[in-house]
Image (tube, rainbow, N blue to C red; front, side, top):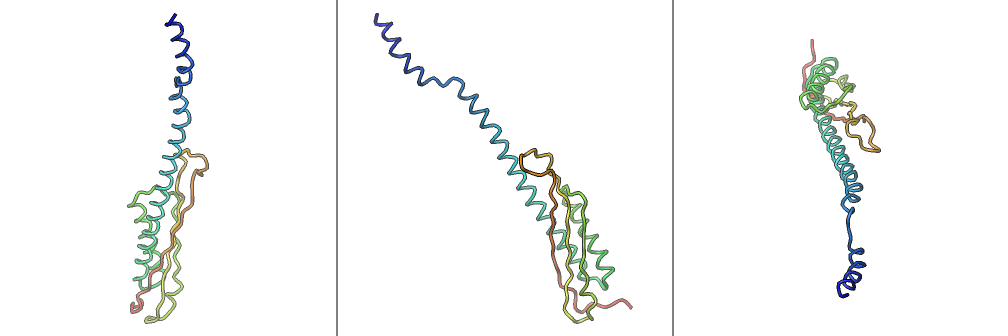
Length: 155
């Protein structure tokens, strides 16, 4: 009789402490949440590294354009430098566009001026499969550099 009483006394306590299946429930909610968290970290990292790469490319383009002798050569050199910078960094940008503002090249030598380069591209994000993250994102960066005031103009 002691054994029967003992079983009845332990049964309710065991039922309260029974955690069978709790690991499966935790996995059902925890694994997708962790995956989403990792996806958002990757999204932030890609966006930040692409922004930094575009700023670097725009700075290189502006620097190259600022030492040119005329506006046409400045535009060509800026585009070449910016595109080469993006290609070297392998950031996965599609549709790279480079615009160069060379309006200050009309000033006479000795007058201060600057050249501005804007680089933009479409960053592919569709492989992340994170809800709320678009399939791609257009990113853009601009930099300016002072024009060499004592440049020689082409004859």
